[in-house]
Image (cartoon, rainbow, N blue to C red; front, side, top):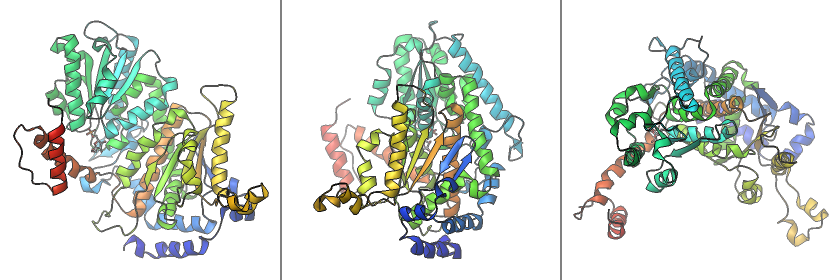
Length: 541
Ligand code: F6P
Protein backbone atom coordinates (compact mmCIF):
# COMPACT_ATOMS: atom_id res chain seq x y z
CA UNK A 1 0.00 0.00 0.00
CA UNK A 2 1.20 3.50 -0.82
CA UNK A 3 2.70 5.36 2.12
CA UNK A 4 0.11 8.15 2.00
CA UNK A 5 -2.77 5.64 1.95
CA UNK A 6 -1.62 3.81 5.06
CA UNK A 7 -3.76 4.27 8.19
CA UNK A 8 -0.71 5.48 10.16
CA UNK A 9 0.00 8.23 7.60
CA UNK A 10 -3.63 9.26 7.71
CA UNK A 11 -3.53 9.23 11.51
CA UNK A 12 -0.54 11.55 11.38
CA UNK A 13 -2.38 13.83 8.94
CA UNK A 14 -5.38 14.08 11.26
CA UNK A 15 -3.12 14.55 14.27
CA UNK A 16 -1.29 17.35 12.50
CA UNK A 17 -4.57 19.20 12.00
CA UNK A 18 -5.29 18.82 15.70
CA UNK A 19 -1.96 20.13 16.96
CA UNK A 20 -1.01 22.64 14.27
CA UNK A 21 -2.39 25.58 16.27
CA UNK A 22 -0.21 24.78 19.30
CA UNK A 23 2.62 27.20 19.99
CA UNK A 24 5.90 26.15 21.55
CA UNK A 25 5.29 28.87 24.19
CA UNK A 26 2.19 27.03 25.34
CA UNK A 27 3.68 23.57 24.96
CA UNK A 28 6.63 24.52 27.18
CA UNK A 29 4.42 26.32 29.69
CA UNK A 30 2.27 23.19 30.03
CA UNK A 31 5.25 20.92 30.68
CA UNK A 32 8.04 22.50 32.74
CA UNK A 33 10.24 19.43 32.32
CA UNK A 34 9.92 19.25 28.54
CA UNK A 35 13.39 20.67 27.89
CA UNK A 36 14.98 17.82 29.81
CA UNK A 37 12.49 15.17 28.83
CA UNK A 38 12.74 15.56 25.07
CA UNK A 39 16.44 14.96 24.79
CA UNK A 40 18.64 11.94 24.35
CA UNK A 41 22.28 10.91 24.39
CA UNK A 42 23.95 8.72 21.77
CA UNK A 43 27.66 7.96 22.23
CA UNK A 44 29.13 11.41 23.02
CA UNK A 45 26.40 13.40 21.29
CA UNK A 46 23.50 15.00 23.10
CA UNK A 47 20.34 15.86 21.17
CA UNK A 48 17.76 18.33 22.47
CA UNK A 49 14.66 18.04 20.29
CA UNK A 50 12.27 19.69 22.72
CA UNK A 51 12.00 22.75 20.49
CA UNK A 52 10.39 20.70 17.74
CA UNK A 53 6.68 21.28 17.17
CA UNK A 54 5.60 17.92 18.53
CA UNK A 55 3.62 16.47 21.38
CA UNK A 56 4.04 13.10 23.04
CA UNK A 57 1.28 11.84 20.76
CA UNK A 58 3.21 13.03 17.69
CA UNK A 59 6.22 11.08 18.86
CA UNK A 60 4.14 7.98 19.51
CA UNK A 61 2.67 8.13 16.01
CA UNK A 62 6.08 8.69 14.42
CA UNK A 63 7.46 5.67 16.28
CA UNK A 64 4.52 3.63 15.02
CA UNK A 65 5.24 4.87 11.50
CA UNK A 66 8.85 3.71 11.82
CA UNK A 67 7.76 0.29 13.04
CA UNK A 68 5.11 -0.12 10.35
CA UNK A 69 7.64 0.83 7.66
CA UNK A 70 9.89 -1.96 8.94
CA UNK A 71 12.73 0.31 10.07
CA UNK A 72 14.24 -2.32 12.40
CA UNK A 73 14.28 -4.89 9.61
CA UNK A 74 15.84 -2.40 7.20
CA UNK A 75 18.54 -1.51 9.75
CA UNK A 76 19.36 -5.19 10.18
CA UNK A 77 19.33 -5.64 6.40
CA UNK A 78 21.93 -2.92 6.01
CA UNK A 79 24.20 -4.23 8.76
CA UNK A 80 23.88 -7.78 7.42
CA UNK A 81 25.01 -6.84 3.93
CA UNK A 82 21.67 -7.32 2.14
CA UNK A 83 21.54 -5.73 -1.31
CA UNK A 84 19.41 -2.82 -0.14
CA UNK A 85 20.68 -0.61 -2.98
CA UNK A 86 18.19 -2.44 -5.14
CA UNK A 87 18.48 -0.44 -8.37
CA UNK A 88 22.21 -1.17 -8.49
CA UNK A 89 21.93 -4.60 -6.83
CA UNK A 90 24.54 -3.69 -4.22
CA UNK A 91 25.02 -4.10 -0.53
CA UNK A 92 25.40 -0.86 1.45
CA UNK A 93 28.12 -1.47 3.97
CA UNK A 94 29.83 1.74 4.98
CA UNK A 95 29.29 0.40 8.51
CA UNK A 96 31.85 -2.34 7.69
CA UNK A 97 34.51 0.34 7.13
CA UNK A 98 34.38 1.24 10.79
CA UNK A 99 33.57 -2.15 12.30
CA UNK A 100 36.09 -3.61 14.73
CA UNK A 101 38.66 -6.07 13.32
CA UNK A 102 37.06 -9.03 15.13
CA UNK A 103 33.64 -8.54 13.53
CA UNK A 104 32.47 -10.61 10.58
CA UNK A 105 30.38 -9.00 7.86
CA UNK A 106 29.83 -10.87 4.62
CA UNK A 107 28.99 -9.82 1.09
CA UNK A 108 28.12 -12.72 -1.23
CA UNK A 109 29.51 -15.10 1.39
CA UNK A 110 32.87 -13.33 1.73
CA UNK A 111 33.88 -11.70 5.00
CA UNK A 112 34.89 -8.15 4.05
CA UNK A 113 36.49 -7.13 7.36
CA UNK A 114 39.98 -8.55 6.60
CA UNK A 115 40.03 -6.56 3.32
CA UNK A 116 38.98 -3.39 5.12
CA UNK A 117 41.69 -3.83 7.73
CA UNK A 118 44.33 -4.62 5.08
CA UNK A 119 43.59 -1.35 3.24
CA UNK A 120 43.66 0.59 6.51
CA UNK A 121 47.08 -0.89 7.26
CA UNK A 122 48.29 -0.03 3.76
CA UNK A 123 47.06 3.55 4.25
CA UNK A 124 48.76 3.74 7.66
CA UNK A 125 52.12 2.49 6.35
CA UNK A 126 51.97 4.97 3.49
CA UNK A 127 50.91 7.87 5.74
CA UNK A 128 53.66 7.15 8.23
CA UNK A 129 56.23 7.00 5.45
CA UNK A 130 55.15 10.35 3.98
CA UNK A 131 54.74 12.08 7.34
CA UNK A 132 58.13 10.91 8.60
CA UNK A 133 59.89 11.80 5.35
CA UNK A 134 60.95 8.18 4.77
CA UNK A 135 59.11 8.26 1.47
CA UNK A 136 60.17 11.28 -0.55
CA UNK A 137 59.56 12.80 -3.94
CA UNK A 138 61.43 11.90 -7.12
CA UNK A 139 64.26 14.36 -6.47
CA UNK A 140 64.65 13.40 -2.82
CA UNK A 141 62.63 16.31 -1.40
CA UNK A 142 60.22 15.49 1.42
CA UNK A 143 56.55 15.66 0.49
CA UNK A 144 55.03 18.79 2.00
CA UNK A 145 51.96 19.29 -0.16
CA UNK A 146 49.08 16.85 -0.52
CA UNK A 147 46.49 17.53 -3.21
CA UNK A 148 43.38 15.39 -3.37
CA UNK A 149 41.81 15.36 -6.83
CA UNK A 150 38.23 14.10 -6.74
CA UNK A 151 34.65 15.31 -6.88
CA UNK A 152 31.40 14.61 -5.02
CA UNK A 153 32.00 11.94 -2.42
CA UNK A 154 35.63 11.74 -3.44
CA UNK A 155 36.10 15.38 -2.46
CA UNK A 156 33.45 16.71 -0.09
CA UNK A 157 34.06 14.18 2.70
CA UNK A 158 37.87 14.48 2.65
CA UNK A 159 37.78 18.26 2.47
CA UNK A 160 35.18 18.53 5.22
CA UNK A 161 37.15 16.12 7.43
CA UNK A 162 40.42 17.95 6.84
CA UNK A 163 38.85 21.28 7.77
CA UNK A 164 37.04 19.77 10.75
CA UNK A 165 40.21 18.14 12.11
CA UNK A 166 42.63 20.86 11.09
CA UNK A 167 43.42 21.49 14.74
CA UNK A 168 44.90 17.98 14.92
CA UNK A 169 46.65 18.12 11.56
CA UNK A 170 50.28 18.49 10.50
CA UNK A 171 50.73 22.25 10.40
CA UNK A 172 53.95 22.05 8.39
CA UNK A 173 52.16 20.41 5.48
CA UNK A 174 49.70 21.88 3.00
CA UNK A 175 46.46 20.03 2.17
CA UNK A 176 44.37 21.09 -0.79
CA UNK A 177 41.43 19.75 -2.75
CA UNK A 178 40.81 20.11 -6.48
CA UNK A 179 37.36 19.13 -7.69
CA UNK A 180 36.02 21.49 -10.33
CA UNK A 181 36.71 21.00 -14.02
CA UNK A 182 37.00 24.80 -14.14
CA UNK A 183 40.72 25.40 -14.77
CA UNK A 184 40.67 28.14 -12.15
CA UNK A 185 40.38 25.54 -9.41
CA UNK A 186 43.48 23.71 -10.62
CA UNK A 187 45.46 26.90 -11.15
CA UNK A 188 44.65 28.41 -7.76
CA UNK A 189 45.43 25.18 -5.91
CA UNK A 190 48.82 24.63 -7.57
CA UNK A 191 50.33 27.97 -8.63
CA UNK A 192 52.40 28.47 -5.48
CA UNK A 193 53.53 24.86 -4.98
CA UNK A 194 56.74 23.08 -5.91
CA UNK A 195 56.04 19.84 -7.84
CA UNK A 196 59.09 18.24 -6.22
CA UNK A 197 57.29 18.41 -2.85
CA UNK A 198 53.78 17.67 -4.08
CA UNK A 199 51.83 14.41 -3.92
CA UNK A 200 48.55 14.02 -5.80
CA UNK A 201 45.90 11.61 -4.61
CA UNK A 202 43.64 10.82 -7.56
CA UNK A 203 40.48 9.82 -5.81
CA UNK A 204 37.64 8.31 -7.81
CA UNK A 205 35.51 5.31 -7.04
CA UNK A 206 34.81 4.68 -10.73
CA UNK A 207 38.01 6.21 -12.10
CA UNK A 208 35.93 7.37 -15.05
CA UNK A 209 34.66 10.69 -13.71
CA UNK A 210 35.34 13.35 -16.30
CA UNK A 211 36.28 16.17 -13.95
CA UNK A 212 38.66 14.05 -11.90
CA UNK A 213 40.43 12.43 -14.84
CA UNK A 214 40.77 15.79 -16.60
CA UNK A 215 42.32 17.34 -13.51
CA UNK A 216 44.53 14.28 -12.97
CA UNK A 217 45.91 14.65 -16.51
CA UNK A 218 46.47 18.37 -15.90
CA UNK A 219 48.29 17.49 -12.67
CA UNK A 220 50.54 14.98 -14.39
CA UNK A 221 51.46 17.54 -17.06
CA UNK A 222 52.08 20.18 -14.34
CA UNK A 223 54.26 17.78 -12.38
CA UNK A 224 56.24 16.56 -15.41
CA UNK A 225 56.96 20.10 -16.58
CA UNK A 226 59.30 20.36 -13.59
CA UNK A 227 60.29 16.76 -12.89
CA UNK A 228 60.88 15.87 -16.57
CA UNK A 229 60.95 12.12 -15.97
CA UNK A 230 57.93 9.83 -16.42
CA UNK A 231 59.17 7.62 -13.60
CA UNK A 232 58.45 10.49 -11.21
CA UNK A 233 54.70 9.76 -11.59
CA UNK A 234 55.19 6.75 -9.29
CA UNK A 235 56.53 9.01 -6.50
CA UNK A 236 54.03 11.84 -6.93
CA UNK A 237 50.73 10.14 -7.77
CA UNK A 238 48.68 7.62 -5.87
CA UNK A 239 45.12 6.52 -6.58
CA UNK A 240 42.08 5.68 -4.49
CA UNK A 241 39.60 3.63 -6.48
CA UNK A 242 37.62 0.46 -7.02
CA UNK A 243 38.84 0.35 -10.64
CA UNK A 244 42.37 -1.12 -10.76
CA UNK A 245 42.37 -1.28 -14.57
CA UNK A 246 41.52 2.40 -14.95
CA UNK A 247 44.23 3.30 -12.45
CA UNK A 248 46.85 1.26 -14.33
CA UNK A 249 45.74 2.80 -17.63
CA UNK A 250 46.35 6.26 -16.19
CA UNK A 251 49.89 5.18 -15.35
CA UNK A 252 49.69 4.76 -11.60
CA UNK A 253 51.34 1.59 -10.31
CA UNK A 254 48.66 -0.66 -8.72
CA UNK A 255 51.02 -0.86 -5.70
CA UNK A 256 50.22 2.82 -5.21
CA UNK A 257 46.48 2.23 -5.33
CA UNK A 258 44.31 2.16 -2.23
CA UNK A 259 41.24 0.06 -2.85
CA UNK A 260 37.65 0.22 -1.79
CA UNK A 261 34.57 -1.64 -2.90
CA UNK A 262 31.30 -1.23 -4.77
CA UNK A 263 29.39 -1.68 -1.52
CA UNK A 264 30.68 1.73 -0.36
CA UNK A 265 28.66 4.59 -1.85
CA UNK A 266 30.70 7.66 -2.85
CA UNK A 267 28.93 9.92 -0.36
CA UNK A 268 29.42 7.30 2.37
CA UNK A 269 33.12 6.80 1.72
CA UNK A 270 35.10 9.35 3.73
CA UNK A 271 36.25 6.73 6.21
CA UNK A 272 37.43 4.35 3.46
CA UNK A 273 40.66 4.88 1.47
CA UNK A 274 38.91 8.03 0.21
CA UNK A 275 40.03 9.42 3.58
CA UNK A 276 43.71 8.98 2.73
CA UNK A 277 44.25 12.76 2.79
CA UNK A 278 42.58 12.85 6.22
CA UNK A 279 44.94 10.17 7.49
CA UNK A 280 47.95 11.98 6.03
CA UNK A 281 46.80 15.13 7.83
CA UNK A 282 46.00 13.74 11.27
CA UNK A 283 47.91 10.45 11.34
CA UNK A 284 46.72 6.83 11.48
CA UNK A 285 45.88 6.82 15.21
CA UNK A 286 43.52 9.76 14.97
CA UNK A 287 41.99 8.34 11.79
CA UNK A 288 41.25 5.14 13.70
CA UNK A 289 39.79 7.25 16.52
CA UNK A 290 37.44 8.81 13.95
CA UNK A 291 36.42 5.31 12.82
CA UNK A 292 35.74 4.40 16.44
CA UNK A 293 33.45 7.43 16.64
CA UNK A 294 31.52 6.28 13.56
CA UNK A 295 31.30 2.79 15.04
CA UNK A 296 29.96 4.06 18.37
CA UNK A 297 27.09 5.78 16.54
CA UNK A 298 26.52 2.65 14.40
CA UNK A 299 26.08 0.60 17.57
CA UNK A 300 23.77 3.22 19.04
CA UNK A 301 21.66 3.21 15.87
CA UNK A 302 21.46 -0.56 15.70
CA UNK A 303 20.83 -1.30 19.36
CA UNK A 304 18.97 1.59 20.97
CA UNK A 305 15.16 1.64 21.23
CA UNK A 306 13.71 4.09 18.72
CA UNK A 307 12.46 6.38 21.50
CA UNK A 308 16.07 7.18 22.53
CA UNK A 309 17.78 6.59 19.21
CA UNK A 310 19.31 9.81 17.89
CA UNK A 311 19.37 9.04 14.15
CA UNK A 312 15.85 7.59 14.33
CA UNK A 313 14.55 10.62 16.23
CA UNK A 314 16.22 13.05 13.86
CA UNK A 315 15.02 11.16 10.80
CA UNK A 316 11.41 10.98 12.01
CA UNK A 317 11.40 14.64 13.03
CA UNK A 318 12.71 15.51 9.58
CA UNK A 319 9.79 13.57 8.07
CA UNK A 320 7.35 15.38 10.37
CA UNK A 321 8.73 18.82 9.50
CA UNK A 322 8.89 18.04 5.80
CA UNK A 323 5.68 16.12 5.17
CA UNK A 324 3.33 17.50 7.80
CA UNK A 325 4.60 21.00 8.64
CA UNK A 326 5.47 21.59 4.98
CA UNK A 327 9.08 22.72 5.48
CA UNK A 328 11.07 22.53 2.26
CA UNK A 329 14.54 23.05 3.64
CA UNK A 330 16.71 22.35 6.67
CA UNK A 331 19.38 24.78 7.83
CA UNK A 332 22.46 23.18 9.41
CA UNK A 333 24.19 25.72 11.61
CA UNK A 334 27.44 24.60 13.22
CA UNK A 335 28.73 26.93 15.92
CA UNK A 336 32.27 25.78 15.27
CA UNK A 337 34.30 27.29 12.49
CA UNK A 338 36.12 24.01 11.89
CA UNK A 339 32.80 22.64 10.64
CA UNK A 340 32.50 25.25 7.92
CA UNK A 341 32.37 22.61 5.15
CA UNK A 342 29.94 20.40 7.05
CA UNK A 343 26.79 21.85 5.42
CA UNK A 344 28.33 21.41 1.93
CA UNK A 345 29.25 17.83 2.79
CA UNK A 346 25.73 17.17 4.08
CA UNK A 347 24.21 18.50 0.87
CA UNK A 348 25.53 15.55 -1.10
CA UNK A 349 24.85 13.08 1.69
CA UNK A 350 21.25 14.13 2.12
CA UNK A 351 20.19 15.33 -1.31
CA UNK A 352 21.93 12.74 -3.50
CA UNK A 353 20.55 10.09 -1.14
CA UNK A 354 16.96 11.22 -0.74
CA UNK A 355 16.33 13.38 -3.79
CA UNK A 356 14.14 10.67 -5.33
CA UNK A 357 10.56 10.76 -6.59
CA UNK A 358 9.84 7.05 -7.07
CA UNK A 359 9.74 4.26 -4.53
CA UNK A 360 11.69 1.04 -4.75
CA UNK A 361 8.69 -0.36 -6.66
CA UNK A 362 9.00 2.36 -9.29
CA UNK A 363 5.80 4.14 -8.19
CA UNK A 364 5.64 7.88 -7.48
CA UNK A 365 6.19 8.40 -3.75
CA UNK A 366 3.06 10.54 -3.40
CA UNK A 367 4.58 12.95 -0.91
CA UNK A 368 7.64 15.18 -0.64
CA UNK A 369 10.97 13.41 -0.12
CA UNK A 370 14.42 14.83 0.66
CA UNK A 371 14.40 18.43 1.83
CA UNK A 372 17.04 20.94 0.72
CA UNK A 373 19.94 21.12 3.17
CA UNK A 374 22.00 24.25 3.45
CA UNK A 375 23.81 26.28 6.07
CA UNK A 376 26.78 28.24 7.25
CA UNK A 377 28.66 28.40 10.50
CA UNK A 378 27.29 30.57 13.27
CA UNK A 379 27.67 33.38 14.07
CA UNK A 380 28.29 34.46 10.45
CA UNK A 381 24.89 33.26 9.24
CA UNK A 382 23.18 35.40 11.89
CA UNK A 383 24.30 38.48 10.00
CA UNK A 384 23.03 37.31 6.65
CA UNK A 385 20.13 34.85 6.31
CA UNK A 386 18.81 34.38 9.85
CA UNK A 387 16.46 37.32 9.29
CA UNK A 388 14.39 35.11 6.98
CA UNK A 389 14.43 32.20 9.43
CA UNK A 390 13.15 34.47 12.23
CA UNK A 391 10.65 36.66 10.43
CA UNK A 392 10.19 35.32 6.89
CA UNK A 393 7.08 33.54 5.66
CA UNK A 394 8.77 30.15 5.26
CA UNK A 395 9.30 27.55 7.94
CA UNK A 396 12.98 26.58 8.10
CA UNK A 397 13.77 23.91 10.70
CA UNK A 398 17.32 24.31 12.00
CA UNK A 399 19.97 21.97 13.36
CA UNK A 400 22.27 23.83 15.74
CA UNK A 401 25.59 22.11 16.48
CA UNK A 402 27.95 23.22 19.24
CA UNK A 403 30.74 22.10 21.58
CA UNK A 404 31.26 22.92 25.25
CA UNK A 405 35.02 23.10 25.04
CA UNK A 406 36.93 25.35 22.73
CA UNK A 407 39.93 24.20 20.74
CA UNK A 408 41.37 27.69 20.42
CA UNK A 409 40.86 29.58 23.70
CA UNK A 410 40.62 33.29 23.10
CA UNK A 411 39.38 35.21 26.11
CA UNK A 412 35.66 34.73 26.64
CA UNK A 413 34.89 34.29 22.94
CA UNK A 414 33.70 30.70 23.27
CA UNK A 415 31.05 31.66 25.83
CA UNK A 416 29.96 34.39 23.46
CA UNK A 417 29.76 31.90 20.58
CA UNK A 418 27.69 29.43 22.56
CA UNK A 419 25.48 32.18 24.01
CA UNK A 420 24.58 33.02 20.43
CA UNK A 421 23.70 29.41 19.65
CA UNK A 422 21.40 29.11 22.67
CA UNK A 423 19.90 32.55 21.99
CA UNK A 424 19.03 31.71 18.40
CA UNK A 425 17.13 28.52 19.18
CA UNK A 426 15.34 30.28 22.05
CA UNK A 427 14.36 33.22 19.86
CA UNK A 428 13.15 30.93 17.07
CA UNK A 429 10.99 28.86 19.41
CA UNK A 430 9.48 31.54 21.61
CA UNK A 431 9.73 34.73 19.58
CA UNK A 432 8.37 38.00 20.90
CA UNK A 433 4.70 38.98 20.81
CA UNK A 434 3.43 42.33 19.58
CA UNK A 435 2.40 43.11 23.16
CA UNK A 436 5.94 42.38 24.37
CA UNK A 437 7.39 44.59 21.65
CA UNK A 438 5.07 47.41 22.68
CA UNK A 439 5.87 46.91 26.35
CA UNK A 440 9.54 47.31 25.44
CA UNK A 441 8.79 50.69 23.87
CA UNK A 442 7.97 49.92 20.25
CA UNK A 443 5.40 52.28 18.78
CA UNK A 444 2.18 50.61 17.62
CA UNK A 445 3.33 51.22 14.03
CA UNK A 446 6.63 49.42 14.59
CA UNK A 447 5.50 46.70 16.97
CA UNK A 448 4.50 44.30 14.15
CA UNK A 449 7.91 44.72 12.56
CA UNK A 450 9.69 44.18 15.85
CA UNK A 451 7.72 41.16 16.93
CA UNK A 452 8.71 37.54 16.29
CA UNK A 453 6.09 34.85 15.75
CA UNK A 454 8.33 32.13 17.13
CA UNK A 455 7.15 28.50 16.91
CA UNK A 456 10.04 27.77 14.57
CA UNK A 457 11.47 24.31 15.24
CA UNK A 458 15.07 23.35 15.86
CA UNK A 459 17.31 20.55 17.10
CA UNK A 460 20.38 21.28 19.18
CA UNK A 461 23.25 18.80 19.01
CA UNK A 462 25.97 19.22 21.62
CA UNK A 463 29.22 17.43 22.36
CA UNK A 464 31.97 18.28 24.78
CA UNK A 465 34.67 18.77 22.20
CA UNK A 466 35.26 18.49 18.46
CA UNK A 467 37.58 15.48 18.18
CA UNK A 468 38.10 12.77 15.56
CA UNK A 469 35.70 10.61 17.60
CA UNK A 470 32.92 13.18 17.81
CA UNK A 471 33.31 14.06 14.14
CA UNK A 472 32.81 10.39 13.24
CA UNK A 473 29.74 10.25 15.48
CA UNK A 474 28.26 13.39 13.93
CA UNK A 475 28.67 12.15 10.37
CA UNK A 476 27.23 8.73 11.25
CA UNK A 477 24.30 10.45 12.99
CA UNK A 478 23.35 12.21 9.77
CA UNK A 479 24.04 9.13 7.61
CA UNK A 480 21.61 7.05 9.64
CA UNK A 481 19.06 9.85 9.87
CA UNK A 482 19.09 10.03 6.05
CA UNK A 483 18.64 6.25 5.92
CA UNK A 484 15.72 6.43 8.36
CA UNK A 485 13.97 9.02 6.18
CA UNK A 486 14.60 6.94 3.04
CA UNK A 487 13.06 3.87 4.68
CA UNK A 488 9.92 5.81 5.60
CA UNK A 489 9.51 7.06 2.02
CA UNK A 490 10.34 3.61 0.62
CA UNK A 491 13.01 4.98 -1.74
CA UNK A 492 16.52 3.82 -2.63
CA UNK A 493 18.76 6.20 -0.67
CA UNK A 494 21.90 4.71 -2.19
CA UNK A 495 21.64 5.20 -5.96
CA UNK A 496 22.04 8.48 -7.88
CA UNK A 497 20.60 8.05 -11.36
CA UNK A 498 19.62 11.70 -11.36
CA UNK A 499 23.18 12.77 -12.16
CA UNK A 500 23.36 10.81 -15.41
CA UNK A 501 21.35 12.83 -17.93
CA UNK A 502 23.34 16.03 -17.50
CA UNK A 503 26.62 14.09 -17.78
CA UNK A 504 25.51 12.46 -21.06
CA UNK A 505 24.35 15.76 -22.53
CA UNK A 506 27.63 17.48 -21.59
CA UNK A 507 29.52 14.76 -23.44
CA UNK A 508 27.44 15.44 -26.51
CA UNK A 509 27.86 19.23 -26.25
CA UNK A 510 31.63 19.33 -25.60
CA UNK A 511 32.61 18.50 -29.23
CA UNK A 512 30.01 20.96 -30.46
CA UNK A 513 31.79 23.72 -28.55
CA UNK A 514 35.26 22.61 -29.63
CA UNK A 515 34.73 21.86 -33.34
CA UNK A 516 36.30 24.25 -35.86
CA UNK A 517 33.47 23.81 -38.33
CA UNK A 518 30.05 25.13 -37.47
CA UNK A 519 28.30 22.07 -35.98
CA UNK A 520 24.79 21.07 -36.90
CA UNK A 521 22.89 21.69 -33.67
CA UNK A 522 19.80 19.64 -32.96
CA UNK A 523 19.01 20.68 -29.38
CA UNK A 524 16.06 22.86 -28.43
CA UNK A 525 16.16 26.47 -29.68
CA UNK A 526 17.40 27.84 -26.34
CA UNK A 527 20.33 25.43 -26.02
CA UNK A 528 21.22 25.88 -29.70
CA UNK A 529 21.29 29.67 -29.30
CA UNK A 530 23.39 29.50 -26.14
CA UNK A 531 25.93 27.22 -27.83
CA UNK A 532 26.14 29.55 -30.86
CA UNK A 533 26.62 32.59 -28.61
CA UNK A 534 29.34 30.81 -26.66
CA UNK A 535 31.11 29.75 -29.88
CA UNK A 536 31.10 33.35 -31.13
CA UNK A 537 32.65 34.71 -27.95
CA UNK A 538 34.84 31.91 -26.54
CA UNK A 539 38.58 32.24 -26.08
CA UNK A 540 40.32 30.37 -28.87
CA UNK A 541 42.62 27.58 -27.57
O1 F6P B 1 28.02 12.16 -10.31
C1 F6P B 1 27.78 11.84 -9.00
C2 F6P B 1 28.83 10.93 -8.46
O2 F6P B 1 28.71 9.67 -9.03
C3 F6P B 1 28.78 10.86 -6.95
O3 F6P B 1 27.84 9.97 -6.49
C4 F6P B 1 30.18 10.51 -6.63
O4 F6P B 1 30.47 10.76 -5.28
C5 F6P B 1 30.92 11.41 -7.57
O5 F6P B 1 30.13 11.40 -8.75
C6 F6P B 1 32.33 11.03 -7.88
O6 F6P B 1 32.41 9.74 -8.41
P1 F6P B 1 33.79 8.98 -8.47
O7 F6P B 1 34.30 8.81 -7.09
O8 F6P B 1 33.49 7.67 -9.15
O9 F6P B 1 34.74 9.81 -9.29
